[in-house]
Length: 380
Image (cartoon, rainbow, N blue to C red; front, side, top):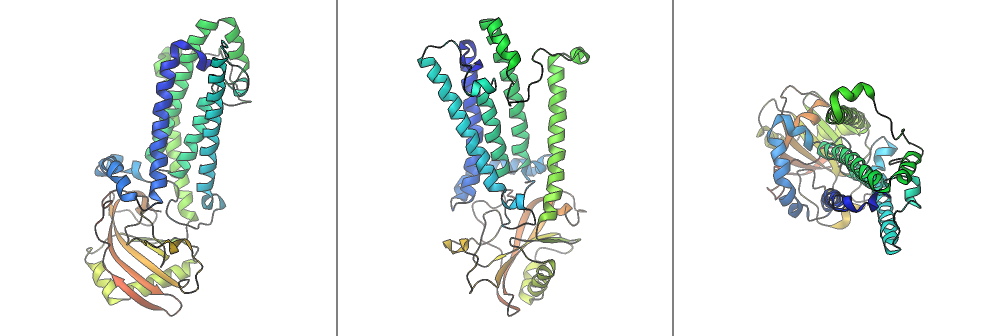
């Protein structure tokens, strides 16, 4: 019903197009990152991410608070987070187009207002749909910068909805007021009193109230994401040491991870390559199947599609260990703190091992500088 207000139609359309553009960029980044064309994508995204990475105060915006590289964790939720994100995103888009269809069908029928269907359940179903879609994209690409943008967009939806409702109250009068009072704003079964005003907040005015609420919600969201990140790190198949974070992309016991690292680090050529990174450094190392690669890890990429099959007998016991030096914003960070303090990973060596025979098959220097070199990418 609200979306029928002629006086706010241009504002509504502009806000929806901006929202779609934002979600499209996030979705485009996610889907491109799982394709061979990530280099081209980051020619667009790179400058912004590099700008955040330059300063300690903004570097945290590039970090992901959920796993984005590993395949296996101890958590059923984390193992299925991509599926959940895609489901929410698709559900949100479906709701959005259903709501848009109702609006334009109502216009074709020359109805003054639409209050049935989705609009019978909530006053702003299209905004609700975008909230679902946005949360789905947040799960697909869980960077702090996306979280900050998502929370900011939620407040924009609320402000736009309030503005539209004032216009509709003025235009439709008591009929809209009745609809406004009985119908929830965004979510069914959750309807705060429409005319409630917090007298204790009048001193600060509307701008003060919204600003205080925005700061409170944003702070809560960031602190919550930080707690989720700490929990997610505990769900990894990983070993955390004073000077390194050692992450396995597959389910491996800690004893196996330690044995693989020991085998790789015992190799003289590998030690020479690592020594080039300097003394008393901190590291983020990855253990991955030999036929697997990820753009988010500074490693040689596997071009063959074979890396989607992890059960081949001839490669099941063969792994690559990618050793990278972590450039930290806090040099004193240890263990799990290294993840949050890392501004950049510099590749040092790739060691291929056969864990069945306990031998090193190959040692190579760092991957050749590529188009996404230096751009902050997810670390876990």
